[in-house]
Image (cartoon, rainbow, N blue to C red; front, side, top):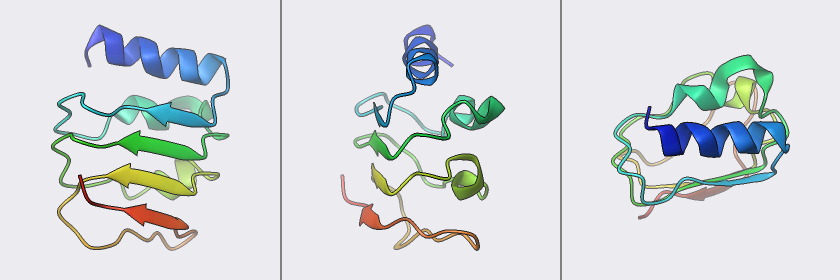
Length: 93
């Protein structure tokens, strides 16, 4: 993971951000650092527009239980986990 991305996620974890902006980062994979150590459980909105993601982790809703909005461009119509569905979808770039 690029050091700038790692720093952004670390700051969000330490400062308990509710919103995290990871737009235009040229990401090809979902950053697993977001799911480590229960550190971002208060995250409500995750913005990941204009990346190259094709999948999301199956445990996303478990690891980010307060996530209600995910803005990204992915090649599927909807994402829903058995424990929670995101309230807002914006799957267009």
